[in-house]
Amino acid sequence: MTRIPTPARWAAVVFAAVAISACAGQRPPVRVAPPTGALGLEIVRTAESLVGAPYRNGGADPHGFDCSGYVEYVFAQHGLTVPRDVRRQWQTGRAIDRSAIRASDLLFFSTTGPGATHVSIAIDRGRFIHAPSSRGVVRVESLSSAYWSRRFIGARRVVGG
Image (cartoon, rainbow, N blue to C red; front, side, top):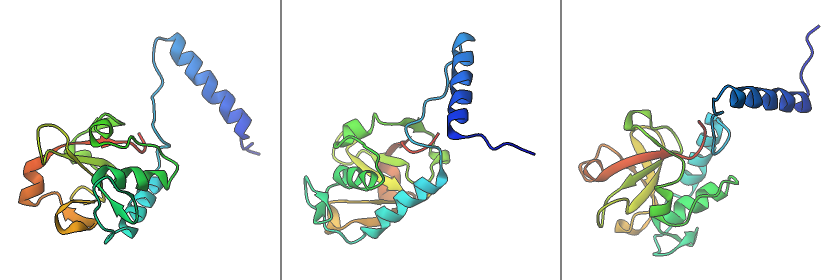
């Protein structure tokens, strides 16, 4: 008969593995949030539920969003804290290659000056959702469009490993 480990036993096993790896000079992997594709998809569903919400400079709720306020709000609905401004969001999580983009990754663009000035949430490798100031509402865009492709500067993973 196979014994199913209790949460306390799992904790003991994880603690032992971390201790052993620390003794061996190896560092255990660090994760910002649990490595689950399901959470990324839930975040995208929340982001999509806000399509059509108005743009409002400095906004961070469904009455009006700016880009970083939108990202902060969507992640907060899932108990995850991200910084409020684009430049600090650009330093959150870990950098990932464009070819590795997946649901809920943050995509960054240089639109109004050098460096990260705009942020969005990836739906998949080719599409993202954001709160742009033009046309005034939260919407879905294609990463391959001429405008966004030229301005893309990087992606960061906040959810998962």
